[in-house]
Length: 132
Image: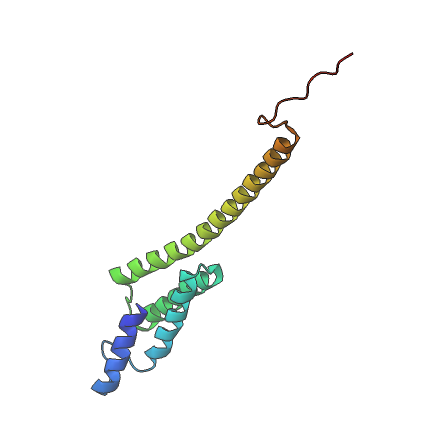
């Protein structure tokens, strides 16, 4: 989405006017969505919410200024952004569950190691019984 906006904004510079309603000022919008995409790729929940909010705000402004303003592409992008928010939240749940599982495995390994240290080794025979 940001890449296409960037291409059209740069094209509007060379065309001397807006292309499909996208002008040079849309470069800021493309840069914002580029930062949002980069941060969501790294798993940032606040940036995912910010990207969804920014897109909803832009869609609301578009509906107010250019009715009807909502097409199938708008809905598909909205669904993708919602899934991005869901994905970042699930990623953090998965990461915390994985860390918890690793801690439990480490504790079990330490407990097994401590237990093994108290057991007699099978490699050495037991001492002979005392002679009376």
